[in-house]
Every structure is written in structure tokens, then in C-alpha cells.
Length: 418
Image: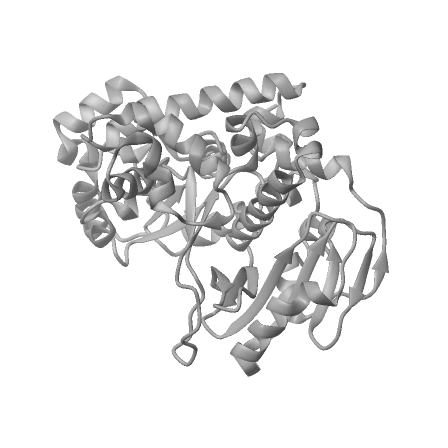
């Protein structure tokens, strides 16, 4: 049974919609997250021919004659791992300009080709981009589609309910992460082995395809340091220290890790009327399973180190929301909030450039009014644009804490409501 059959991807409906009216659709995201499986599941139903540039023969043929390769493509084709041959994009543009029918090509990429020079412009107006991440907890839990957490937070819809604490089950979800191949392993030790080998393969092979920078051997250690800083304010000096490398060089390396979807840089929320905001971004690892493996932190270690668990839990929530947003209606952007009074909100969601909601993450089973201080400040700062503030915690009740403010059990994050 394939990963796709085990874990149906909610992004499939978005892919099918895009193919109905757009010539080229690019699915990009980290290696092994399920891009090829999703593309082939849709392609099989629609008669696409599949090519992968991980096949060295196909790669060499396309490099030798990119124009001829595109000219000879069948009417509908999947081109897998397209980041390995960026010179193909000009030929794809020519192909599409000659035939603008929708659904011509499905591309997949394990690097963010939109960050490569000129590629973003070459297919502007001709290509739709879908970002696919590791599995969401919604998909892992086998939930049927319904009203998800993001829609509920913008609707301010959290009725008072009672349930049960997750406890160790939450630790297991955080340590497991969302990569299908890791979750298929039956023990923590085997999962961790896959995760460490995955990181080694990306940093030793994929990144060498993308850059001519020397000293790439520091990347695994840099990623391990970044894992220790996940959900913290970005500090280039702290990351540069052990390597005797300049801050600009470290930033260049971090951009590479971002390009292959191993880290995310979460920008600060800002407002022209407010001058007392901290303008430093936050760093998040792409997957908490990878972060835990890099830090040697299994479920037992996370149970003992509550501070580290708190960091990973914030990253876990951020990545769940970010991946859910790829198949939730509306356009969403993500930020964090911190001001010079040290009031903060872990995750700020902006919908359609107009509405704001905030999420604060707590690893404990208790919640009080003080946990809403940052959310109340965000509500004051955003006025009528503010929709809802939520403190996610490992408790057993959804509770109202005043106008537009709720304490919500963390399991609501992957619940689907009718």
C-alpha cells in the first residue's frame, strides 16, 4: 500500500482545481514528504506520463537538449525533482506559450525553485505553486474533511467542551514528526535512524546540486545547532560562533537550508503605527521529528526536559498550521509578535491581508489570564481586524477567557468539525 493510500492528502483537491485552469502546477516541499506520490495519484487518473530527474539517463537527456526534450514531451507529463535541471524552465515557458491549455505539466521540486534567480519570473502567470509539507496531524489521524482549526479561529468558534489530556501521546506526536517513511518505522530507534540518514542525504547530496559553496561539511552541525534554537528568535552570531565563519556566510548557509525546506524563517508581525515591536524573525525547523532526532531527544528525554519540549511543541503547532493553510480556503501568512515590553504571541495568522488571529502555545495542562497578555496586546494593536486569540494547552476543556479569547486543548488543532 502506498503512502498516499495510507494517508490521503488534503492538498489533492487543490492540485486538481489548479490543473483545471492553469498550464503548469508545481508541487514543492521537502524530499520524502509525499510530492511524487500525490502527483502520480492524480496523474494516473488523468493519463499523464511520468519522468523523474532522479533518473540519471533522463537528467542527461534533458541537459543535453532542453528544447528538444520539452518539444518531445507527451501532451500531459509529470516532471519529478525539477530543481535538478533549472535550465529546463526556459524551455517549459516556450512549450506553454505555444500551447496554453490547462493541466499540461505537473512539476515537483525538493528545493524552492522560486528562490532561484530568474525562475520565478520565467513562468509568472503560467504556473501555480502548491507547497506540500510532511503529513499534518489531521492527515495522520485519518480525519474526514470538515471545518478545520484555521477556519474556526477566524470564525471565533470554540464552544466550551471537555475531553481528555493527551499527555505522553502528545510527546509521541511531536517526536514522530510527519514524514511518511519515518512514521512507517515501528520503533523510536528505527524512526530516529531514518531521520538522521535523511538529514545526511539532503545536506550531502541535494545541497551540492544547488550551490558551489565550499565547506558544506558544516551544514549537518549547523542544522543541529538550528534544531536547538527552534522557535527562538533568530541569532546569527550564536549560530556562527562554533564555525569561525562570518555572519553573512552563516546566513547564506541558512538560506540554503531554507531552500531545501529544512528550516523556516518566521518574520515578525509589524504595523506602521507601532514603533515598539521587536523586528527579529524566529527560526523553526521544518519537522519536529527531524529536530528531536538531531538533538538526540526521544519521548523520555522530552518528558524530562520540559523547556526543550516547549520549544518543539511551538514548532509542531506552527508547522501544523502552516501545512493546513495550504488546503484551507483563503490566503494566509504567518508571523510572530513581540514588543519591547516582552509581550509576545507565538504565531500570528493573517487571512487575505485583512484579518488577524493569534495562537499562543503552552506545554502545560493549566492556563490562566496571564497567558493571554500577549494576545490582548495584539488585539489592541490590530483593532477591528482582530478575529480571535487562542492559547493551545494540554488540558481537557475549551474555555472562554473573555471577548474573542479562548483556551483550547491542543487536540483541537487536528479536529475536523461539521
